[in-house]
Image (cartoon, rainbow, N blue to C red; front, top):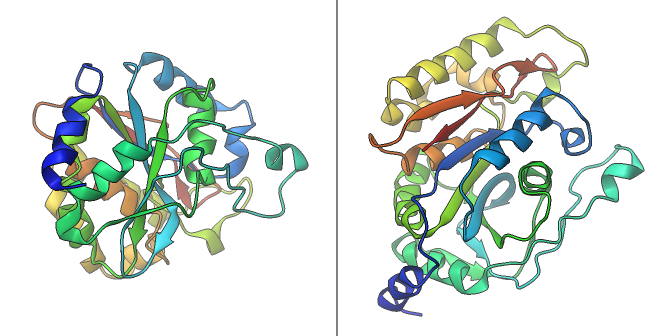
Length: 271
């Protein structure tokens, strides 16, 4: 499929309102089955959103190196990419259809970034644990985009800019990670660590001030960044939401707060 036909295909999608772009702090996989403030907010957001033609999810849990992949399966499998949780969680399925033609068109939109279509992967818990509460009928086509860990944070931001046109074609962009995610420091019932509160507030201030370039250069923030994100994968999805936002969007936060001492659940929607 050429870039020209890719654009022509997206123009054929069902006319709809310009879709919002979301960053969702997904936290523990247990949020998929627990009735708590986080899962209730996801359900409320899902009810409030306009109906999308498809959902593109950028999850912290599909990592590649040296290439960006776009998932093109007809029926993406529900991946239970975790361990040590109750059987009920492993029994959860999110049988949403894929969006293979749109996914291939998306790969073409990212051709200059050397993105490729792929049938590997499916819907990991960064995607389905959120969507199962937002869109429980699982009747909206969903596809995922991988995170190339060989790229700099600024490179991710530039790549994501080329996804912006999808918002005009009925595609809801849902990026799923956490603004603070320090897995070794997590403690059940712990009060938020000072450094977690500090980094969460730093990100919120920069987002509210639309200083997205500052966030895209966060790999240069030094020790605070390293403490908030010992590994980068849960931070990167935020860049994809910010890159497709613009001044016409109204910003709203939801699920503000620190869970397990070291995980920011702060989420935001640009619409």
